[in-house]
Amino acid sequence: MATFKGIILNGFDFASYQAGFDFTDCTGDFAIVKATQGTWYVNPAFEQLYDSAKQAGLLLGIYHYAEGGDPEREAEFFVQTCGERIYGAVLFIDWEGQSNPTFGTGKDAEWCRRFIGKIAELVGATCIPYMSKGVAAKYDWSPVCSVSWIAQYKAKAPTKFVKEPWTDEKSFGTMECIIYQYSSNGKYGGKTVDINGATLTKEQWAEMAVQKGAIEDAKEDALEPSKTYITVTIDPQKAMENLALAECGYVEKASNKDVYRKTANAGHNNWTKYARDLHAAGYYQANKNGYAWCDMFFDWLMVKCFG
Image 1: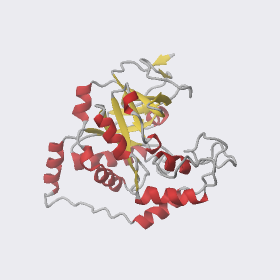
Image 2: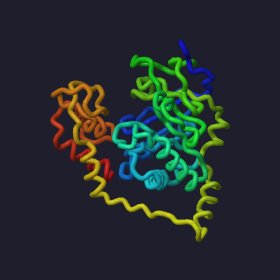
Image 3: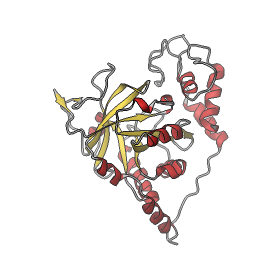
């Protein structure tokens, strides 16, 4: 049995459904928080989770979920949304198949290369790709990045941090795995969270983070007459329409399981990601999962697109 060795730092990654995570019950070293998706979605819990992690003294990371559209526009939207919180954070691009038509087309590495290149141009720092171990081994990622954040799970059993988590005997591909996500069922802070181990020191993490001086240098470069820059205009009504269309095919679940997968665990018990996300973000007076969700879907669209 193979294990992932050399872990120095332990950490979490967060999306909207971990809103309200209790950092007083935190034994980790770093937190990576989702900020954006595509060119339309902002995690409603981004600021709360980021600020709470910072106050708890954790090293910080921010990630963008790719939708496989225009990589430069997605990069600009990500940086614009992060605002001042980008300083001191390591940046990541989440490359998965859901809501991403470019995934698995053979253009995966090129899309990520363009996104990461735009990030470097905008903020003067690297951006690390996140993906499953199978995807990492499938393509040549050497033109994209030399290091990666890789996911692979042995089982779904609840767990805490472990020193040498399981991995299979297969290669991590052309990139060195420096952060390994080995469970989506970590039990900390009163929540179910993804947990990770990193082979980085705190000093190495800080070296990869965005520095304010580097951003100022990038802004000065932008003043060069030879450069052409894109102004991103987000039409909120169009964003809501696109989000609604992207949800076509989602089925309600038989139980509170696989709610973020479109067709898995299909049933007629009214369990949905829409109710879960709204409850996590503090809407309604109680958890409405298990209730009829026709109105919840429109509430979810409004929250995702307009805050």
